[in-house]
Image (cartoon, rainbow, N blue to C red):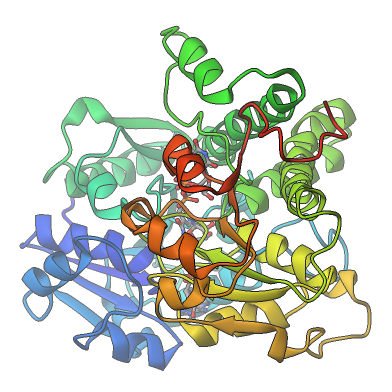
Length: 481
Ligand code: NAD
Ligand code: UDX
């Protein structure tokens, strides 16, 4: 059967970079080139300071870069030479026009497909690595076929969605629960699946490589993310009920998680899920269902996003109520801005909505995150979330002087009225909270949006603690209970 000698990957982002670094590490016989139109990003991939932070990534890149792993902005040349082209471009939510706020924007994908068609002199396997709506392969195939002038060139399209999570990408890539490959049920489709399978078989046990038809593979990715997010919204909805009844969401999660049919993972109540994928992919699923006339199905999944918005709002309201119904002019320390620990990524971070909510009530925010840069935080807080939220306005909506980004958590907490934990960074557990307490205004509040701190200890020190989904501190106002 045909072998793969060269792989090109279009898109050097959070998925393309780490994924291809792992392929190159495990397949020394294959040349792997990651290409991107963003030259700054390519330059960073070729430097000592990689463009994304991911534990273990540096070692993998260093081991393979220059050997059989390359990063290049010569997109056309490397795509033209490749046997397999992975497409790992961004597929964000459309911000305007038909389907705005829900549908996936496939403009980058289509642009990539047109480019592939125009430079192809040999037949290629084109792999959907990006998360795309179900049936995208059909559209991509049309674009490829109609834009390639050489009739001898054949394109075979595969769906190979990526299941890595940020912060654990390297682990997830090295030992995946499964690799999923969808292809056409034709002889050439099946043989393309075999070629891609042979790449993964360099390190993934054969029984973990699942094959499916194209539409199942595409839909499995959206479904997996919808199920994962649904677990979080389910436990978060219960966290509100716990606070109203005196139950403890940690105990409830543990009790249900030991049922092997439910399982214990992904049941941590939080201030809300974030990240570039969950909301985008559920909204996309909702849009597809609506388009197909499946209103009840659309409504069911849309509620996962509504509960997530409710949870973020509920957190902000707790802070304001507990602090005597006013945070105006008060200094509030925000610990953590990334959407989860071990990443510098802030896309759709719940911290953004919480900070916006606190600023709305005129708080002054002192923000500390171990990995997110000061520029990133300012840029995020200055940008309206979607254009339709603030029609006609693209200008920063917030006075920058009510937001300070600090490099030191103790400095961020100095003279503050409250700490809000919005990301579950391990280092937050190790701080000297006596020292922090002494430097704060009194009463000193802690709002733990991730339930990672030792609440009993904090109470002994003197803090008034709000822990999500846990019995309420008597000091905290109780309009809900
Ligand atoms: P990203 O924005 O970090 O990277 C995408 C890159 O593609 C950018 O650097 C962009 O410049 C480049 N690009 C866009 N159009 C191009 C073109 N025509 N030619 C060359 N380069 C082009 O995005 P990401 O987080 O890596 O996500 C990529 C895809 O993978 C998305 O569909 C996403 O849903 C999916 N996904 C993401 C994750 C995750 O954890 N981030 C996990 C699984 C799947
Ligand atoms: C997710 C999927 O897990 C991954 O398989 C897919 O490929 C991309 O989308 P990612 O968004 O990188 O990965 O991180 P994930 O670990 O899923 O966390 C997403 C959000 O949910 C984070 O904000 C996290 O803090 C939150 N979360 C996660 C909870 O609030 N509670 C949990 O129990 C788990």
